[in-house]
Length: 172
Image (cartoon, rainbow, N blue to C red):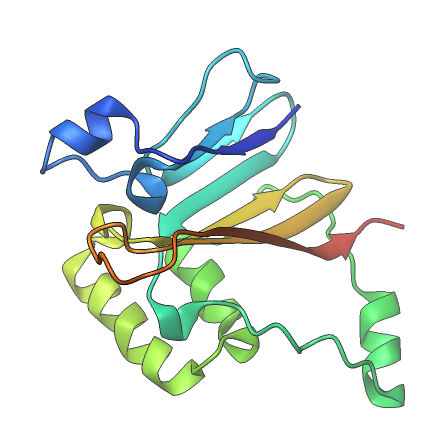
């Protein structure tokens, strides 16, 4: 089972090594084995048997998911009901996942430029930051998870952590 944990402080290795890139600056951790071990680095991870996958990366504010994209009109209903993930051998590359989800982002145009920079520099998993995105994909259900924490370097900011999840696909 998947476990997602936040900690108030960054892990020592993320806090002490200025070259280490960690999710949420070292305060977001993922376990793919029910909490026995944890991953704090961005990456494309496969787990369990079958096409189970988590793509985890730090993100730019414009590429964070909108909170109000859940309105379902009559036109959208048939697409939603006809959707659903089918197990396939083909997986989207991590940058393609971002591109596919641009319509749900806060600022798709500005995000497009950020994605293109990541593509040209091939550095999606080398981005540091306080905002992180997780795409969790399994044959039965998929989730989009957004994490944001306050900037602890700013003495005037309120200390907070926010973890939001949306179910994006459900099998029939």
